[in-house]
Length: 152
Image 1 (cartoon, rainbow, N blue to C red):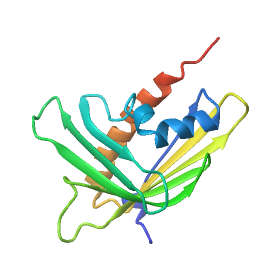
Image 2 (tube, helix red, strand yellow):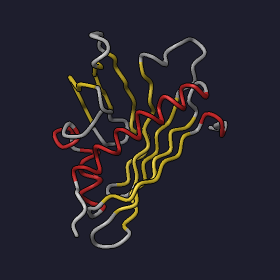
Image 3 (cartoon, rainbow, N blue to C red):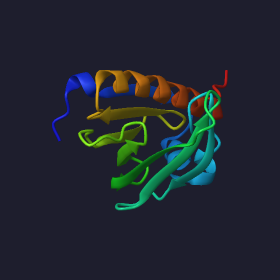
């Protein structure tokens, strides 16, 4: 897939937890429900069947709208503790000419207590979609970081 740099989003965060714990909160739906979804969203359903061919399914609503939105995907690559690659299609992105976007999350152990998380979301339908997803992903990752507060 040759993604345009104008429709590719890349984010990096350092999370205050070992990479195995950070990976777990991405792949265990019960743990993911503790942080998944940007501020202002309510998660109604979350499935994270993190195996090749497994499904990702998220149903949510925002405080602005009562209507539920669904985002779905299929895991294409799963390297436990290291990497997740999944397709990503939201009901807001669906149109006959919308490309399938791809999310890659890499977990790099910096030391025994911190993990560098690199998220790439590529092949988004437009620059506006990229910007909207950047806002959502950043809010999502802010909530993830709050699960593992920094100690002094």
